[in-house]
Image (cartoon, rainbow, N blue to C red):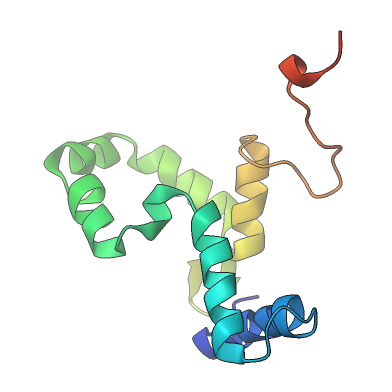
Length: 124
């Protein structure tokens, strides 16, 4: 399932309301949204704060990457086809499928997996 922009915005407002107004930290949605924004931005990876057009211009729209994609076209298409699902006459990669891909390459852990603890933090 996909979130439309207004659904995403509603979710953000509801989160801010519950996290800050219902908890008694503030009384206005404007302040609550500001607090949530600060909370999320502090934890966001630096690349996510970069304008998408800037990232694309410096990292995606390059002759070297275009050449690389040409040489990897078949395996990349196979990966996309394996994770994408039919939507009318086209295939789209849904968020759940993207998470499955990230789990398969072990960039994120499945929701039901035990937390990973760094060995250096374990008592000896």
